[in-house]
Amino acid sequence: MKKYTIIVLILFVYMAGMTIWGYLKGTITGMEALLGFAGMSVVLVILWFVYRRRQQFRDERKSGRKGD
Image (cartoon, rainbow, N blue to C red; front, side):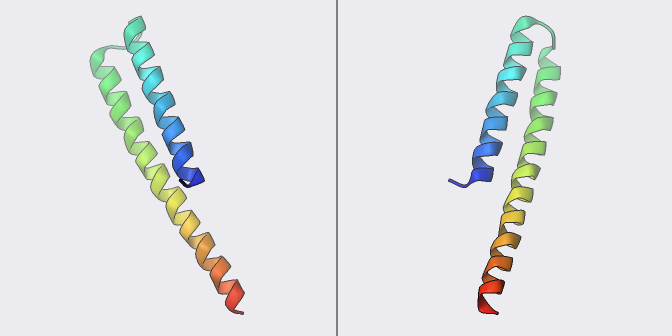
């Protein structure tokens, strides 16, 4: 498993835990919890794609240097 995938999974678990904890404590409503969870999920998916694309660029640069 790639490092960036682990980072995104850890952030997802943290976000889910904080959302559940806030809902159970009564500091956020059910709708706020769902909207926050959905919004952060979108952000984490975008972050995963950015990390993946960045790793592809690094791999391309690394393989390009070996050929020179």
